[in-house]
Amino acid sequence: MAAIELNISCPNIKQGGITFGCSLTGTHDVVSAVRKVTSLPVIPKLTPNVTDVSSFARAAAEAGADAVSLVNTFLAMAIDVHTRRPKLTNIVGGLSGPAIRPIAVRMVYECRQAVKIPIIGMGGIATADDVLEFMIAGATAVQIGTANFVDPFLWRKVLDDLRRYMSTHHIDTLATLTGSLDTSRQATAWISS
Image 1 (cartoon, helix red, strand yellow):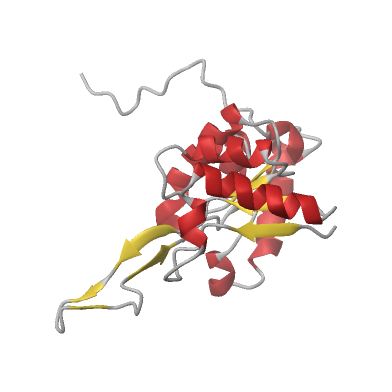
Image 2: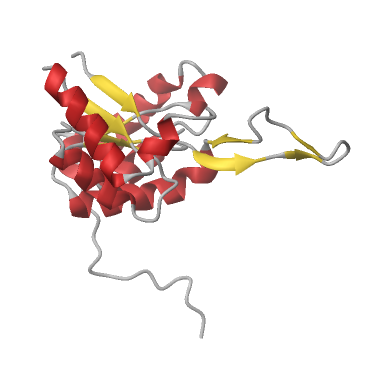
């Protein structure tokens, strides 16, 4: 199925994407404008570089988004300590991969509480457990990005492991896991006396 993913949140350019991706009005206006000119599903890719990503998911949904994808990369910076110069031409750029996964999972969870439209989760997914974590938090689907650079055929292993998980847990369809986080019991392993 064809769709349009609107990258309204790219931190790797000097002007443009992140400017309107960090504005509720800008997000609403861009999604609304695209919605008016296409019958294809419109899926804005939201930035994590905001205080409350769920408010941006709501703005996108109200503007006619069919789904949202989150999260894009986090603003980050690296410095060459020998030259004391930024390692990136733009000084800052996008951080992706396993380091952002726990934050991305939290943001998917928060957005699931705020909107009913599908959520495509992403950010550091490299295993079936990562996929499951995003889905249980509220993702309807996921994207694997950075891990594909390491292993372009990773999807085979992930799918096989998802099938094993479904068989072990007697799950007929992965969709039943979307938003199934059980918050009735709080984890206490991290609390010390």
